[in-house]
Image 1 (cartoon, rainbow, N blue to C red):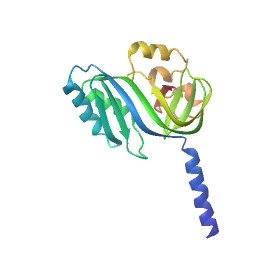
Image 2: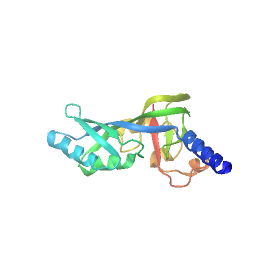
Image 3: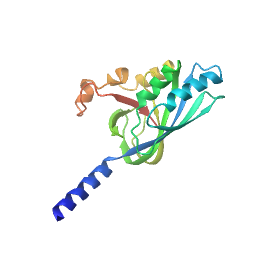
Image 4: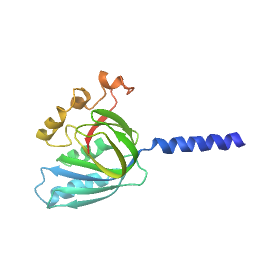
Length: 183
């Protein structure tokens, strides 16, 4: 019986120590909006995603404050697709979450919330507490801004969004989705 409880304890400690970030909210700026109906279309599309608790639109800035359901895995591509399905595009997406002493380095990959992230144009830093990261992948910001970040690394994943040979050297499986971010 002691062995059983010791195993459960070790499993719980391992599971919690692996959790280095949990995203709680996002700030999304959309492009192409011209009226309140445009905002409503995006709002309706976003609220249909199962991991989103609420969406608060700001018509004046074409932005949306998104709150995620507690302990839900956030599907970043689903957010982009929801905006595109409403007929618009993402101009900027920032994720805010609680970080637990996560060490990040420039041009390196990190696993967060069950997903792979590649940090670009960042100082070596420990993220602890509430922090915001910005998605800098193609289709998550304006083309001129993507160009600025895409030249920050020679790794092919920056252009494709998926693990290539360079990423596989660090143990990431081929064709794994990799999100490129900055602080």
